[in-house]
Length: 474
Image 1 (cartoon, rainbow, N blue to C red):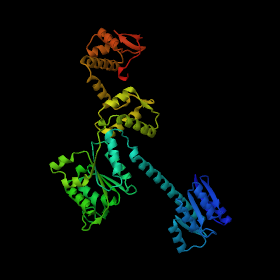
Image 2 (tube, one colour):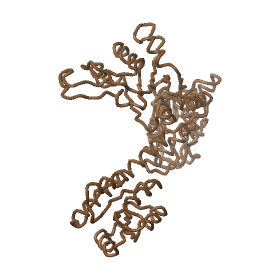
Image 3 (cartoon, rainbow, N blue to C red):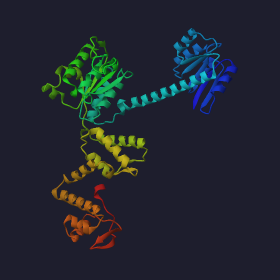
């Protein structure tokens, strides 16, 4: 419900405006003076204010100025019988959103009010989403307790007031863009643009125009001037992801921008001054690329004023379980599923998996598991098959030989019985062993199912042995 405040010293005008604006989705408040209106807006949430300009004690212009000085951002529409261009300019300069002169058509008033409220709702939504985005990229919201990540956080905090260029290195999926956002959001440039570009995802023929911009007629299809991303990032931060894939010719142009703080559009003979902080990232070894002449040494030193090395997920110890729980909560809320925790088997698989895709792969795995989960606990079978297979292999790759063989034999027997729906004749035939041997081994490994109908020599009977004991989840 929208709350609208009407301020006018004329009671008839207040009542008229209240009558015109009242509907089921609005609450209309009245104030007989600007001073009273100021008290109302300071003590409560108001979505829109309509105020007369000429009032005793405090004018509408003075009310607008006082409201803005008090931090009140609600849009204000001024209404007066003394319409003039000068009055309108004064109101708008003071912070009014729009201006309406008496007498006015009712339709005109309603249109202005509807448009203003719609703009206010959009502004509130953008403000909320921007706040959520800023919150997401705050340094304290990046999960990491291992020493390597704590070192990264420490450096980010120390360089927050600096404009030095930063190079972030690390394998794909380690969170390089997340750290780049954190650098920007903890810097003095946080209210300015953060402009990302992936140098590997844009064809070489287009990358120059995207970065530096172009003028009309610079090439076929350039029908108008276009600013590049470097110019768009003016006063803010330019994030060059996968900088190692930038063509060598563009590296020279980028070096010139860093040195001269000027950018020259494609097809132009003039340069434009730019104030940009550059944060670059790569998963490649730039020292090796320098040796094979595919990356400029001088550009490397310009970018690598501060280097942040992000560890792979398998190097981060307990951070794996912290991140898994973080993603569980995130996707549980997003997918609206009552998932609360992981089963022992699922936890074991997550802890033992090497995570070659790093944090990104872990995030995808948890989303996959929550999507498939049918209870409030993520089970091993809910995780991607790669994790399950790795856990099976891990069980057979450690310990004394006889224990490894026993685990492998138990796993083969269990899987074969499940595939044969516990038809022991079919399972024995598939395994190439006698029925007696299969029963002996099933008893040894406690592989049986309570009240399961099984087939023995073509005849069916109930199996009354204890319920299946699955060592996989113990």
